[in-house]
Image (cartoon, rainbow, N blue to C red):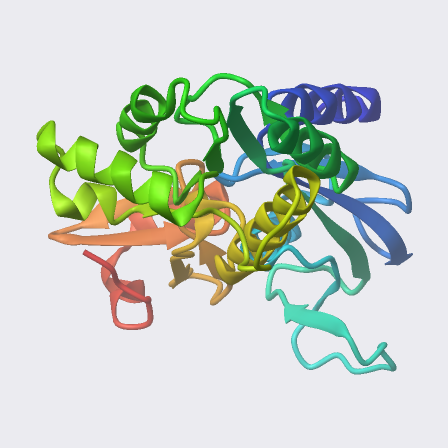
Length: 301
């Protein structure tokens, strides 16, 4: 457990590094419970929890829901309580029953913090200058160097370094590569790249001309068209954090709680099968007599 200030310091470090994380804050407690209102934790995209949110009875449910929040980018309220307990809850509250919970309840606000997308923009044309301004206004980070950390790459050098920049862009796995050029000039550039040895499947990754088709446009209008296409492309990607697009879950064979499988998840093997646990206590109970729990567990190879 860390001091609450440490959680915020860690959040600042992750935000500065452009990494996703979740802030989880206890908003309501029904005694008895091992936490109090205002307690806070941070959950990373690999399932590590920093801070205090209620111990082994609460942490697995919070981590699981935190990873789901990173997957869809939406905040949510989580209520953790003992099985069979009823009571009024808000319509959008997610209720999780924990067999190891006390007679109390813990409500947690889950808030995903997602890094701003990165646009690598090559060129100093009027369209490029306008695109920098517009992209930053809607929260994108803009860099002038092509790198694998970029979410999108736009080449707007007006022919000066188009081919070199496109070659560098194709060395990355970036999902959007756009060339700002007329259809004629862009076609000539792509033909040149093919003659230089680039296969068709590589040049097919390039959007040329980049941007929505607005017809004859000024440089500033071209920038607007490119940004509109970037926003539409970004929204079409769904999950924002690729690290947790495929969220894998298992059921703790001891307590029955659903847990997210990540680097920090407690696990144990029995024969050729792997089992996952909400906490070290459940793992210890399992390892003391695995056969008692094998039939009940959610088993994954």
